[in-house]
Length: 341
Image 1 (cartoon, rainbow, N blue to C red):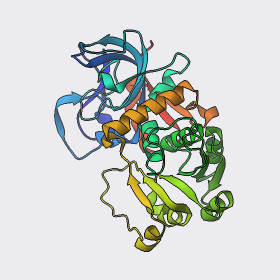
Image 2 (cartoon, rainbow, N blue to C red):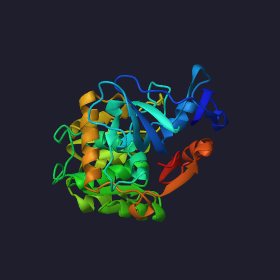
Image 3 (cartoon, helix red, strand yellow):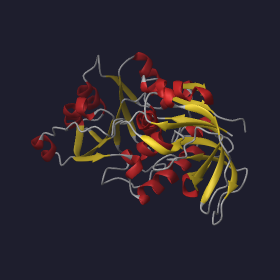
Image 4 (cartoon, rainbow, N blue to C red):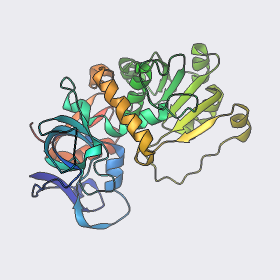
C-alpha cells in the first residue's frame, strides 16, 4: 500500500511516499481504509520536533475517515464496510492516517453516518474533541454536550475562524448557548457567521469588552481561548462571576509563563482550565466522542466554505505541502485525499 512516512524529525521534506506491506489488525484493533486524512498543527509540530531518528518509520496525522477493512479479535460494534472516523491515530504510536490502510485501536474508531462525508469525518478528531472539552470545563455546566445542555449560557470563542473555534461555535450553538466570537477581519467574520455565531466581533477594530457587554451585561460563562497571553486582560474583564476560561493552543510545548492577575481572578472566582485533548481523562474523552457523534448525527457540524470552514485539499504524495499549509496558517481545514473508497 501507499504510505507517507518519515525516519527522522525535520522539515516537511522528510515525509516521503513509500510502498509498505498491509498488516492484519491485532486483538482490539481495526484496520481502516483511509479515504481522507486530516492535518492539524500538532501533526507538523510532531514531525518538526527536536532532532531525533526513529527505530521504526512514523506515519503522520491523527485524524481521518474511511471504511473498516478488517477487525481484530475481541472487537465488537464494528464490521467490515462500516463508514468511520478516527481520532488520535498517531498519538504515542507509529501509525497515523496518511496511508491507505491504518491500524487503529477499536476505541478510537467511531461510526460515521451515511449522510456525513468523509471530509467531515476527517475534520472532527482533534478540533471537535478539543472544543467539547473546553465547552464542558465550567464546573457548573454539563460534562457532555447535548441539545439544551447550555441553554441560558453565554460562550465567547476567540479565533472563531480556526478549526477548533469553528467546532466550538457549532457545538455551543447545538447545545443552546448564545455564542459570541472574535475574529481578525471581515472574511473571517463571514466564516464565523456561517458557522453559526450569533455575534461576531472584529477585535482589531472594535472594543471587545464593550461588544460583549452589549450582548450580555453580566459577562460570559465560558471563554474558549486560543491565545490567552494576548487576551487575558479582556477575558478577565468579560468573564462572568464563577466563569471559566478554557485555554488551548497549538504550541503545547511552550514554556512561556502566563502572568495571571490574582485580584481580578479571585474577585470573580474565575476558573482557568488548560485543555489538551490527548491527555484528558478517559471519561472526558468518552463524553466528547459521544457528544460529537450525536452532533454529527444531528447535522450540527457541517464543513466546507458555505458552513464557515473552507477546505484545502492535497493528494497523498503532497502530504508535506499539506503540513506546510497548516504551518503557514491556512484558513479552514487542510485535508489529504488518500484512497478512493
